Structure formats: structure tokens, C-alpha cells
Image (cartoon, rainbow, N blue to C red; front, side, top):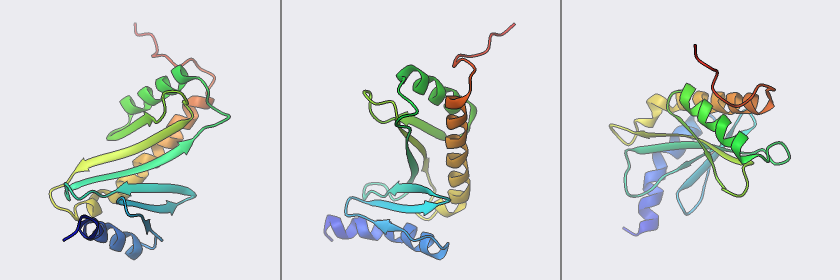
Amino acid sequence: MADGDKRTDNKAPLMAFLTAEGYLPTADEQGGIAFKREGRVFLSFVGDDDPNYFNLYCYMNYEGVLTDKDKALAAANEVNRTLKAVKITLLDDNDPSKISFGIEALLPSPDGFQGIFERALAIIALSVDHYSAKLSSSRPFRPAATA
């Protein structure tokens, strides 16, 4: 089986699941699957090396809103510390406006993503909301002093 064929086989369960759930997923040759939910584009990258690995990402661009790398990192770190399972990453060291919100999981079976899918979407959406709120809040981006 050619690498391209195997990658297609590994994408099939997620593509079928998304379609059954009413999404309109699109796939590319590199293993990426994209779909929209509530105005946001979500992506999952399916590889041929570990069918039990699941990931889901939402990429946001805060261009014109966020130019301070320290503020971006502080907000990301705070949300990463307060929410379960989410990983917020600055995608470009020279441009703090490009942010990735993601979930990664090691599953007991290749179709195990079905049991965590809705929760993964919800935590990513919540992390985007919390991150955006931290950027727009007027309070300083540092931990509160402890007594």
C-alpha cells in the first residue's frame, strides 16, 4: 500500500464521523482534515505513524489586536495553567498574533476520538474565549500576589 493510500485509510474514520455529525470536512494530501463549527475552522492532522493519536486545533490570527509577545505568552501560559488538556502555542516567534489552540490525546483505539470529540471542541472554544478575554482585559498579565 502506498503512503498516500495508508494516509487516506487513516483519515477515513474521522472523515466519516464528521460527515455523520453534519460537518462538511475537507481533506488534503498531507493528512489534514478541516471543518467549520460556529464560525471557527478546526483542523486535525492524521498521520500514518500512530492511528491511536488524535489531535484537534483551531488557529486564530490576532493581527492588529496583539503585537506584544510578552502579553501573548503571559495570556497563553495563564490559560494553559487554568484549563485542562489544552495547549496554546504562539506559532511564530516574530509574530505573536498567530496562535494555535489544540488538544492532543493518546487513545485506546483509532476510533476512540469519538468519545472525546465534543469535549475537545468545547475546551478549545473555551480556551479561545479565555485567551481573547485575557488580551482585552485591563488587568496586568501577571499572577496575583499571594498572602
